[in-house]
Amino acid sequence: MKTFLSFIHKEFRHILRDRRTMLILLGMPIAQILLFGFAISTEVKNSRVAVLDPSADVATRRIVERLDASAYFEVAHRVDCMEQVDELFRRGEIALAVVFSPYFASELQHTGEARLQLIADGTEPNQAQMVAGYAAQVVQQALPRGERQGVTACVRYLFNPQAKSAFNFVPGVMGMILLLICAMMTSVSIVREKELGSMEVLLASPMPPLGIVLAKAVPYFVLSGVNLATILLLSRYVLGVPVQGSLALLSGISLLYILLSLSLGLLISNVVRSQMAAVLVSGMGLIMPTIILSGLMFPIESMPEVLQYLSGIVPARWYISAVRKVMIEGVEMFHVWREICVLAGMTVVLLTTSIVTFNKRL
Image 1 (cartoon, rainbow, N blue to C red):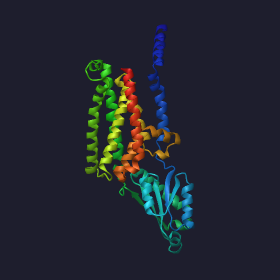
Image 2: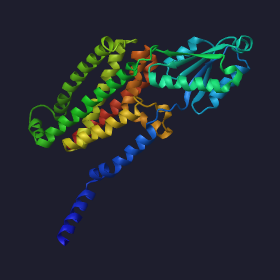
Image 3: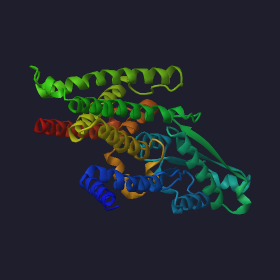
Image 4: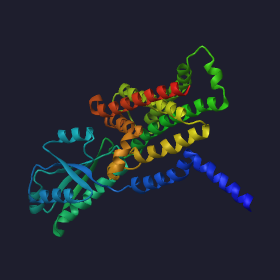
């Protein structure tokens, strides 16, 4: 029995000395439960609203005040024309616009019927339907019981009139596939050479060490370009999702994202020592945060403020946002300059760190 206990003690010492194992065993469950507990939420919270109210009467003011007082909406802009509403949607500053008829109160008083329009951002159809549904309920609750039946809320989904889920699905799949192929496969292929001992053979060739590593990354860059073209063709001719904006701009942003993912894969290959560790870091460390914190499945504005800031370091968040704007909304480069700058900055930082770390290790 004493021998058996000594073996158990030895195994505990081995595990406790391995910091990476301890991080996976104890740190990963904590991170996962916090992400799943706080980030996964389909509720509507703090959705920014623009109001076009040409009548500015008592009834419309009561509705606007009720919207602003609710936990679901924040009246962020008051506009004077539909052109301003379209511009706010293209800049991504609002999720909903409430447009009242010019004589809303008088129509409701004299005819018993009045109309208002709820315009939601259809690039995320599921979220748009929930936002419009919540807004319609708030509007009904803001009116006296005798007037509720006479108010009709007409819902329109901007950029996606039919509320097709493919309009949200395609940009997210692009971000996931490109990250998976570039980061995971690049890191695994380079670590495999180190693990098998063949990297020393390659380093004995006339090619500089950095050139060898970059040469291993080029095929994944080409394959990612092929995947990008395939996804765009399938989305256009099979799923019916057109490219509303510039194809050249969309391709340029995607190539920048591919380069960023390759740089991330190179950095992972410098940090880990085995293929299994590379798969764990790439899979658990990249895929799950990308799904949860990129805005692909769950709205970022509904997350706690800490996780909203944390989502800013997820590259897929900025790429998916840029693809939605260019591909679905058809905006120009001026409206996606922020996303491009963030992706370019991340690429420079990751690539520089990868090169410095690689030179130190070899």
